[in-house]
View 1 (cartoon, rainbow, N blue to C red):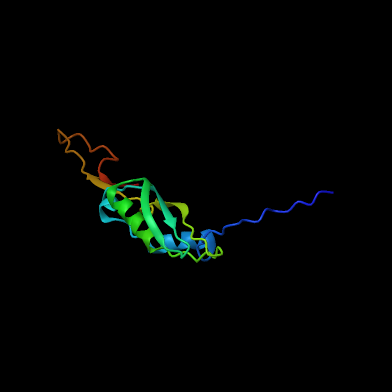
View 2: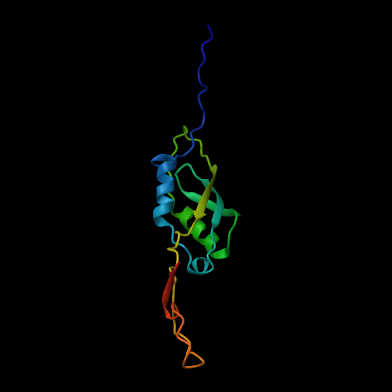
Length: 144
């Protein structure tokens, strides 16, 4: 019977405290949608690459896939705010390369409700002897 063991990693990478789920929550809670992107209804994903030192500091954030200049700047601002945990590697200084996707998605807007109303008036008979046709005149409302 073979003994299957996982190989030990020689170097440990810095981890975000709380893992990936905590990282997503941090981004979601600190994201400030740029006003110009909101006015133009721009949505999409910005991919940012960065390095994490063995002390957990962020260095060299770079936009790999951009959306618009204001969204790119907001994504870089968010990445610079990140703080990773320290990695203890027996005195070896290590920089880890990481990537994160930051989604810019607008909340759905309420559909605009429209109402059209009009009133019709009966036409006058051409001669006095003709009676008015029934069903003419009234008001109508159409809602969407």
